Image (tube, rainbow, N blue to C red; front, side, top):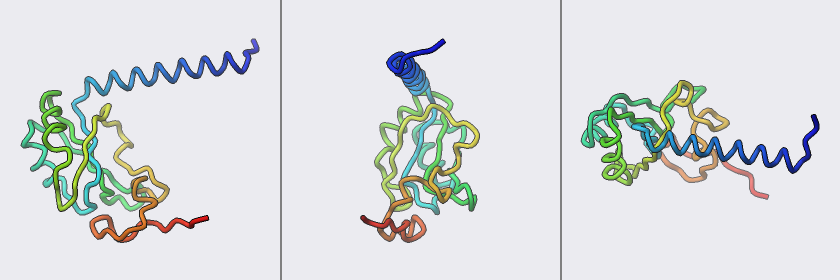
Length: 147
């Protein structure tokens, strides 16, 4: 059977909307937070100390550089209840940890493999093109050639 380009586009659009709906549904039920902008030197204990003030923490997964297996500036914090996770979103987002302003966002739930950074070097995407010096992020970012 042969489908027109328009028909294929419509099917792809429907599939995208279904995936987006499923993702939104997972986020609304999730007890897991993504935490970004951590220092590369922030420990699991420091994360626990801060986030346990909002409720009972089930587990913390520190993000790792895929190549070096060292911390790369993010983690996942999973709570036992949605209410505790909501407290953390409300009270911890935008606060300072290890001299850095951290940001939290809802996460659909941790899956094995997601603890690794997604940048080319194995670290985080956000740091791939950093041009400033940041000792908490391991120094200078990768220099990007300008056209």
